[in-house]
Image 1 (cartoon, helix red, strand yellow):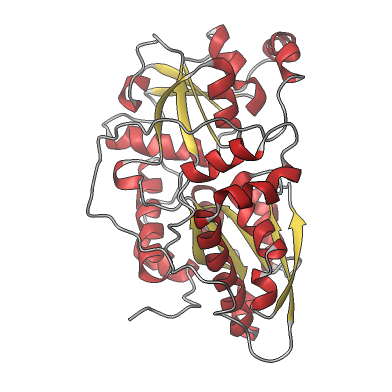
Image 2: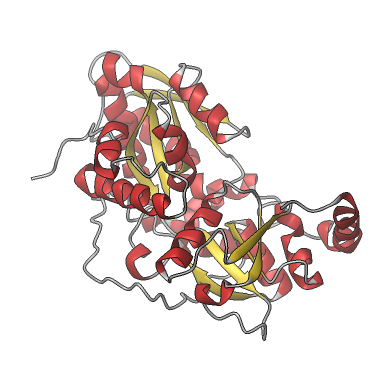
Length: 361
């Protein structure tokens, strides 16, 4: 259910004053991790080992590739770091970064048709279109931990289970964070379609919608999630940093299928270069924040570094670990009627995943 023109005008008037004071990409100190009812300490993802870079260099002439990413998203900081710190170059690649602001279908189509060679995105947004057959393969995870659920303090909403009978504000009906918390709700025994009502608002108006009472909770991803939490002193009800999801990736790397078929060494090189970069980001969040700072006007490197420390940039599964995580997400998306009920999760995961690095001993 979307808001009316009258609703939107009211929210715009209410938000007008604060919108001018909200810097693009502003960050805040890390939130406390919220208890999760599905804790499973047996789930472990082993990060790739940190290195100076160059361990995946493609032989022969240097390859020229295009990598699509969202330049304003702190989640994709590794792409900028890989260019500025030479990780792509040391792996015998010239990589052109393409700041892509279109829809997921447009991004996957751009990769599949060769307008881009690779792209970074969210698993819970990519899996449905990949089920439908885009010629794109996932080669590695990038990191986890960037989706959050908020309510007003004193609202009585202390867990996802408390969303029964409530209205949840989202940025769009296909948002990965909307899908994620619908999955959690389903595992708690709620019917996400009948027990929760959804209303879509622009991300920067979600906080105002919550304060006005148009919704009782909101969900969105970082960096805007952090901004609203700190600006409006919101209660963080849940996130994807705990329990069985504490080591589950949310951001992934996709490659065009024809690159895998025509130049697997280049596919391996760009995947490995980003893994090396993510380890560097994990070990050097302050320096990574300085690199990203030009893409986040009005904030500080210290705030950006706190954001990087809150995510799991040192945990980026690939090989069987990532394939199993994708299969788990596919099974969970069936619970909320995003993936077709007759889809075989393991078979689909096998089809959309590409092991370009080789299974470790």
